[in-house]
Length: 524
Image (cartoon, rainbow, N blue to C red; front, side, top):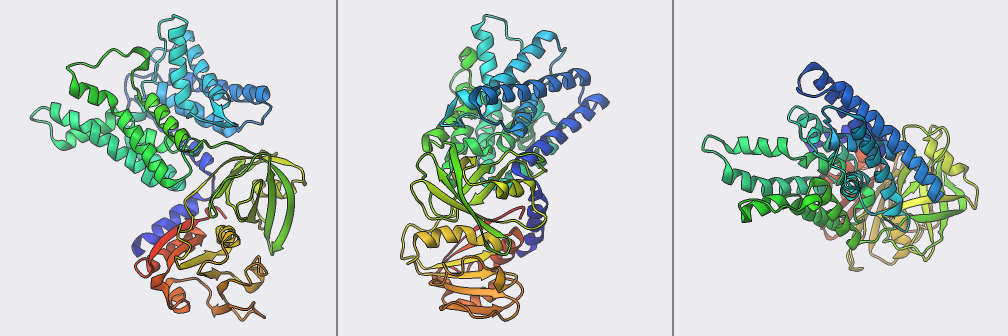
């Protein structure tokens, strides 16, 4: 595990420079570039590069315009980057088009508009229920059936599963799943779907076909990896807890392989017409399962107070127009559209630092001198300003049994989920080991005065609150923690902070504690 730490550090550090939405945009755009080069040079034969680019242009324009129109109709400010991602996804669902004509381009534009409309019409309290690209792909086919026209376009997903493009899709999907912390969810979907599909293919394989041949056929004929990496992982259509997400992934994989099981039971599949199970319909059914788990709604938040608590650490308190429901340790995704937006985007996730209340929550964040445009815009908000919370989720929660001894390890701003937990249940048997660059930068000292705290920082701090101890060390390590907390093996450990710190501490604690759960703050 230790040998992998440098790799994790590099991935977390590099991927943390951009938001999840920006990473998806970058990866999909690179896939478009690779696909275009392959069609132009003949690596992928039989396709028109010009027609494909024309289709892409139509999707981008229609998706962006549709997003703006829906925003005006529903009086909200749309997320422009989300419309670009939707257009890029639709490109990989519908391309290739040979040859392209005006009718096909019109239907592509309609698919993009329907995808944007689904975010607002097929929604629950301001939060869309279905993956927009999958919804647009499905609805445009239904519309073609309704108007009685011969289907001019259909989501074939061929580009997403093209053999030449597959290695690039796999790497891109891995990066996205790593960044979104949904690698396990994506892998479960890939494994279940692959196994179900290969059951039939192995049974039907010719004697000269090896297991590897069948595996390649599955990978290159079905958009399993693409769907797992770029669509199933969408945070707004997944339930908030990891175990729920795994169930959704498994159910979606089984439904995805539905035609396979029909073929196992009958000589030929039934004619289900427009409702035949296709990848996009499988994903939509998975979205319904996710919705059944948790009817997640958007939050209209009004800023009440904003204050500096220590150094460059600030706490912002918001009031919600509806009641709030969250578990201490969970996070909020916040949307703050603003002018001069940089590559960090308009959406960020922050651990909630306040205990559960009926209509209020607090966020604590570091805002260094050279911070993102998002954080500057957030601090510039005046009391009474309204922002949008797109959802609450996360599994960094304490054990249900309040008698469980705890070890809380925080580095820097990683203290925030523990603030929520300690403010809610301050009587738990918990030791907080907090790593800081100096004692002057420790926030909420007064509130933590009654907590058993081990402060790890270089130098000798001044007076410490009662119950606090100091360890003179520049960095947190498992050995430092073990020496400061003698009853380590009896405690369940929670580690939160920058990825490098979490990656450094996690291997050394594993096996020395009763249990281990980690969280990290990427991009700080």
